[in-house]
Length: 279
Figure (cartoon, one colour):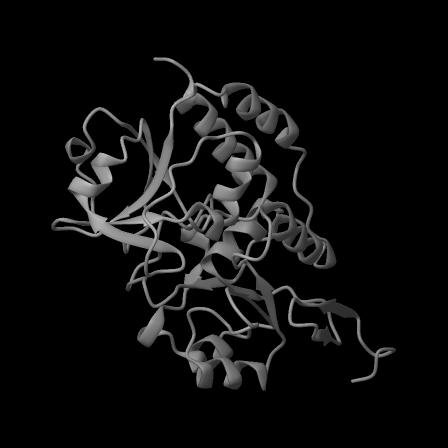
């Protein structure tokens, strides 16, 4: 297909220019990407999960997606590229955490998809800022005819900046692992946590050691860090969190795979600002 023949084109974060001879309308996306597109007024045909997800879509990642109107194509080993292709999908939207590798899909399955349908890959890894990730999804949505309704993201940022005083509660982000272990997030490795730090939130840094994104410690070690607010991973792969393990710390939900939209980010900033205020 020549550039002149393409009705739709988009350059993804691998530097690949994807094109189609007709406007894509039957979109299948990684669940985080699908929730983001929905926030921009685009209802995907279906979504798929990662190796961490199960037979049902992870509600923590799904944002406001109306699942009664969206097909779930599975996750990990249960993801069947043939089923996706037979659905008539004309665009796949995937995410990557490193080197453009499609996240949550076996490399052979990803290759099979790319041989038959355009696959847009957007980078959501630790080298990207939250603003940059949101901007790339907005650009993709715009190329597909979508637009997010006006959202007071700047106002949400300012509320958080005002609440994040020098004596505001210290915040620890974690993912419960069950038993006596817990994964503590390294703030610099997560775009959303870095965004909090940039707005003045005092984030607890876990112990140094192995693990680029997480530091795995005992609950006793986690309590010794004396967090006053805890952002607790609510994804399906995280173990249920027993609040009593953290003493008097206030626990609020945290989704490390937030939809990359102004609406989702404004809610995240607002919830965090509320947790920092005296109760």
